[in-house]
Length: 107
Image (cartoon, rainbow, N blue to C red; front, side, top):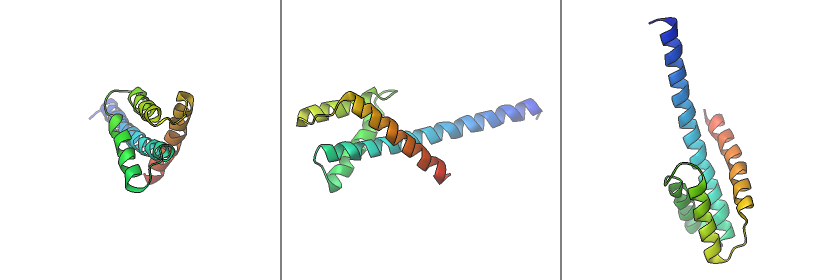
């Protein structure tokens, strides 16, 4: 194996690891976001946990964050909860930073 091949293999492994870490961080972010939203919706305990799972699943519908934002917006609107899209996006950013730190700390 040449040095170039070894280097290419190293980059491929790093990319795969980065993608796995990103996926884990996004899933954690969505769970945290779901628990935050559940609290605003008046859910607690097992209901809050189930709602958080539904937010994680909602993120699998399409690439990007718009599917999650649509879900939260619809749920907030249905319950008459006043939360702006800006606040949802800001919370997503905050939770992603925390989740990424957790994933990194976990190794």
